[in-house]
Length: 457
Image 1: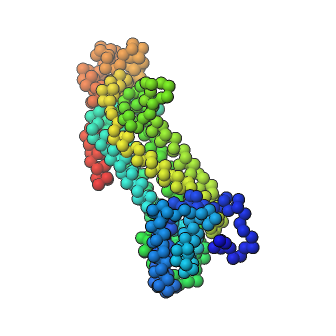
Image 2 (image 1 turned 90 degrees about the vertical axis):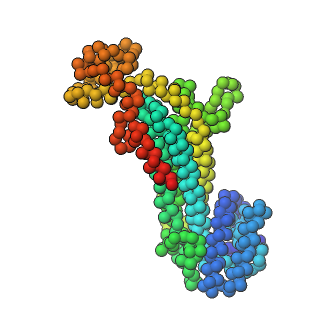
Image 3 (image 1 turned 60 degrees about the horizontal axis):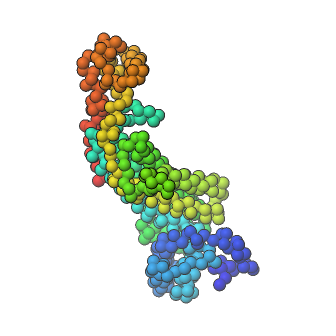
């Protein structure tokens, strides 16, 4: 069969060109969205009396039959028909005859493909929001069980101050909360209809773009036909948000790898999320969080790839835009799989509370509280900072921790020290007194968890 657009041509397309330019190998993922858009378009054509109502009804029934065959796996798409739009149009004509050719009245593949991607990304974004919520729920579950569990807090990967483990986990909850907000906000840009914009200049047919948008559930339509067919901002925005989400997934994954190591032993990942070694039988490798870290790179690459494709394109549609889909599909698939793995991995991990407690009792992360103690006794903070620095050096040289020092040793550095210094230095006290809003005290962490529960609904 000749191409549906072949009237102007005198030669068949070179087979290599056909294979090189065809997109059906990947845009067949848009098959159901393409049919959904076509159903809305043909309904509008019938309502506006652009085609007879009986033709519109016949086309509608043909599209529904094709959708059923696609869903059941009966359809095999062909490279010679280039893309999902031409494949479905060819199937429709085969199904119902020449009347199927009327479906393309008042539209172009340019607005058709844009509509498909808006529909696809709208649906996937809503799904991803639910997956982010599942990760947040898993973090919240672990946080509730570990409000009183203490863990060294780090800066520069050096022990800084003890914190509630729940507080640490909730930091990721709020990262994902912002991610969720970004996804929800992006729907405002995704929820625009390009359908009926034509190739770039609109159409001479008296179509009703607002009606087709209403049928498809879009909240608005593009007011400029050239922008409608050439806009890929909504995909760039999605890829950018996805990159941020993967950044947060990667940071949490890195902590899981560290925490589950023999050197830390703060957590143990469930066996179902780890693998072994082919040569070292004792190994339990955290392969899932390691792969989550790695897959962040491919999502970044998809973002940079599309930005690079778009940066030099003149208006309106260009074939370059065919390169917008594979990266989008890959990112959706990567992010979807990552989130669905992360939630149960968090929920099933074992927290080694005793190991964490031992860690906070064998470091100098309570040093800041000694400085604060001296300040409350009247010493200037800068002077207190110097005193404590010398104390820490002394303790290190004598292979002691601060709680191991005798009161007489404390008084060698300042007469302001009294017996109550031992209470001040206790890790539980160090955490409990951090009562400022958003702080790590159990009281504040409980308030934070209550707020998080309200956010999740």
